[in-house]
Every structure is written in C-alpha cells, then in structure tokens.
Length: 144
Ligand SMILES: [Zn+2]
Ligand SMILES: [Zn+2]
Image 1 (tube, rainbow, N blue to C red):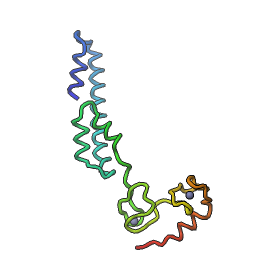
Image 2: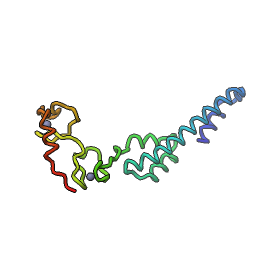
Image 3: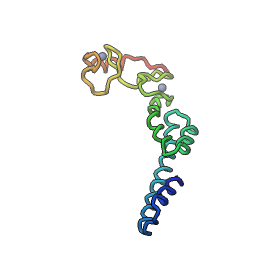
Image 4: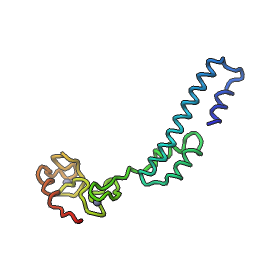
C-alpha cells in the first residue's frame, strides 16, 4: 500500500495544494482500512470454508493490487455447514449427514434430486412433491 501512496503523491510534478493532499490522505487511509478489513475477512472466511487460512491470508497481503483477495473471492469454496443433529461438518449439496444420516435437504421422492422446501413439483422430473416429499422425509430411518 505504500506504493499506492507514492504513486498518489508523486503522480504530478507540481505538488498539489494542501487541501487536495489531505483529501488524498483520507482516501488512501480509507483504502488501507478497507484492505485490512478485507484481509481480516479472508482470514476468518477461509476457515469457515475449510480452506487454508494462513495461505489465503498471506496471498491477500502479499499479492500486489489486492489480486490475492480477488483470487480468493473467485476460488473460494462454498461455506461449510454443520449438521443440525450431530454438528458434524457437512458440505453444501449433501442430502444427508455422513455421520448420523440426518436428512439435510429435501429430495424428490421420484428422482432423488435436491428440491427446495415448499416446492410443489420437482424442477428436475416434474414429479408431484405435495405429499410425497413429506412422506419420504418421515420414512427415512435416523440412526444415532
Ligand atoms: Zn449429523
Ligand atoms: Zn424429481
């Protein structure tokens, strides 16, 4: 970020008036504050997504022009969830908890695709979910 300050203050051969300097200083300060906040966010968020916190924090700090942060937002994994029953870490998209077989998301009883709660018809096969889904979710045996 010091490079940015150098560019800002040395961009012009003639020194800008003090008011402009103050404004630029505030702007640079805000940018640095945002940068630090983003690095902090990357650090916490990487942990929640099961990614390497150290690696991504270092990338966010040392890759120039905040490219490490941009890269992080492109490459980051979906957030990990916890099973509501046994608190095991489950990946998004899982239909069942791999530890306790808790049903994490409703599935179509006809084609077993994941569907949204409240859907009346399956968006994949067009099957009726009205009562079938409720029946299916109660039929699943839950192992402790
Ligand atoms: Zn579980
Ligand atoms: Zn279906």
